[in-house]
Image (cartoon, rainbow, N blue to C red; front, side, top):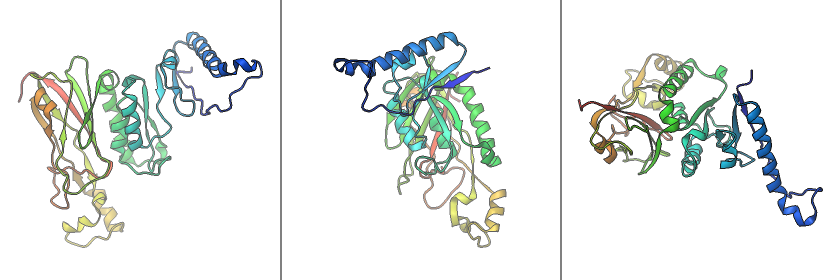
Length: 311
């Protein structure tokens, strides 16, 4: 009852030689190997048409059109660090559609870089393509498990556009992606920043590929944040001093959550493609639901739905 096979080959060739060919044909060895591999995959996928075969880029460097003749998706890289993956996936999309790029939400600190990135950023980058998870669910908190359940449900609801929509890379001071359904009625967009810079709290989201005269609803999903993420700034609001990582700090964090910003805009496609101003990011003080918690490696996923008229 095999449904899925990942075809891995984590070994590169060096000093390629075959004892079965004369010296005049040694340069043919690698080409003959590739032809043999394609023949094997052709026989295998025809014999088992109901199995989803996934190729693997890492090590074997097998992300090419030849492999995609037999395997409809390819693992993009063994580097699963979200920041690195942004750049990897961004580059892949110059030559390949999102529907063939396999991406995973991995553990943090990341196994390759030891970088810590938010769970929503790891998801927001991985969902542009074929989404998967590679993390030990038994080690995750109940809060993280609930967030992953919501992510998977969200991805399933928008999967067709995430995989088969028209993809746009928008250049601005933030990393900005947008993917639009073929009928231009639905779009998802993402912004991501690498490092926070002071006095850079105002950002825009810029869409592409929408119908200029159509009316759209632009929105995000509201989140809540652990008060411990704000460090000792908790003492600017607490009537008593709370030491970081103390029992009191953990108790407060269990019951007090900081509200995330809500974006809820009804406007035309032309305005969204010009750029919609987002709630300002946090800047040292004055946090509320009108302020965006936007730390290092933070990101936001936005949804755009066509509607009959602007409300």
